[in-house]
Length: 500
Image 1 (tube, rainbow, N blue to C red):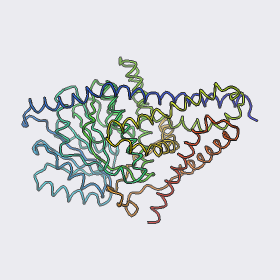
Image 2: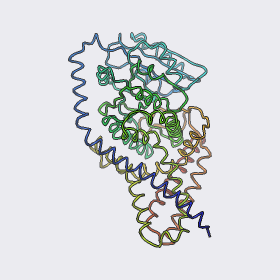
Image 3: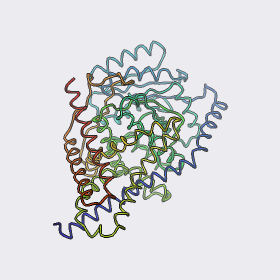
Image 4: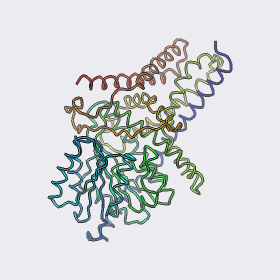
């Protein structure tokens, strides 16, 4: 039997983790409320800003734009990327295109061939290649900025295909001198490829369709998402430039710029389609980078933010934003302390405590889920058919907890890791295959922990049912399914690559 001290320690850890999840979950409801009240005015302003700009500003006075395309080993999509930005409906004489290539494979040859073709068509397009990759993406953007001629700098990752009207839809915002950056909403070109891509697309829609919109429209801190956005060049320079001391250089620069007084904007009606990762190991790598970089950015900027004269609500939302990935360590703590909780029999003598736990878990779980459903409702007419994938997103969100907890711990412990970019395969339709292509991210040891945590959660579920503790059981079922789902998908995708 467990000692009383261990029982109390487990209980305190369990409740602290549960309360933390509750707070993050309730904030999802708060963002939905802000979105609901701010959306009509924001959408109206978008049309007014565009109409006023094109009515008052002649094409000769439109701002010059440098388009930066940072690439690294993107043989399957680099040509598509270059061609897409050369289709922009914007005066050629006001455009400069920079290919910032750190590639070590034949991507460079493919890019140079596409560049030559575009130059023959009259485009001002330059090629910058680095062999050292110092600073990774931040270093490449910094290098390109040294010679950038544009007043504005638009950035697109290799997996994006911006529409020809992208610049005309976004440039008008910069008529206001206090605007430092504008972020567009991410779309998806391959969301129907698999259940994994469908689940990811819903998660992305929740972030862009609700979170980013609510933050931007309510005057809270928001962020540039690394691509499909435009910066004012002087804003980047005033905020200290691109810095590579975090894995999310985009998030870091966004906060430094806003702390300098610049305004960042988000426009939901401008959608830039992109390729979603089609393998779970690529998704896990992407999530690891985002989770670790977010905590690194929090450590770097929250102190200065808390010392500023910003309102308490703005500071609270900034804290929730930068530390959002803490939900994953909290999930693991809830799982790990669930079985020891069974030995605290006094805790279950009254229904009051189990009902309280059940309520907190419901609100914490339903907060993000409600936001994802809400995002589908506001973005798509066929939202009812789209939300059928929600259970898979819930499994993905819980199953990824081991991977992201490792990232959070690395950030807190200052453990260095490289910038591993998300592989792109040029996948558009279900018939396309990634298995015979390069860049696949292999299976790693994290999957072993996912499997054992799946067994642990399943054991806890069995014990809770055996002892007739039914209120907590549904949540242990979600954790069990999540860990096993991510584990088996990781093995299947890792093994499938080796077979091919």
